[in-house]
Length: 63
Image 1 (cartoon, rainbow, N blue to C red):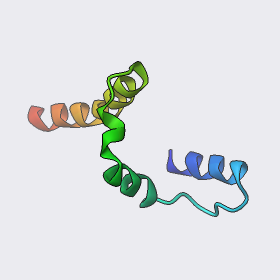
Image 2: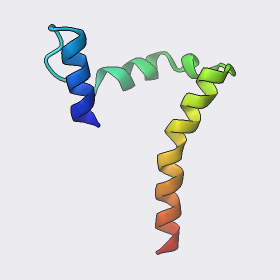
Image 3: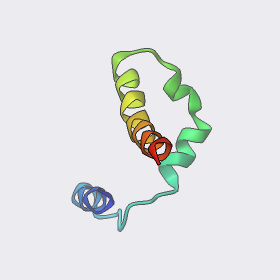
């Protein structure tokens, strides 16, 4: 998925050489109120973000 994101960013802007793993989480930490909304898009984003952790935790408790 990271390689796909890098390719997408290269297509969108010639200035972006590679995907930056630091900037998105850094922005989110500084703007945490961004995820405090209760609109449909925010709730869907939070559900998608939670899904891998729920799956991983389920696998860890089964062993």
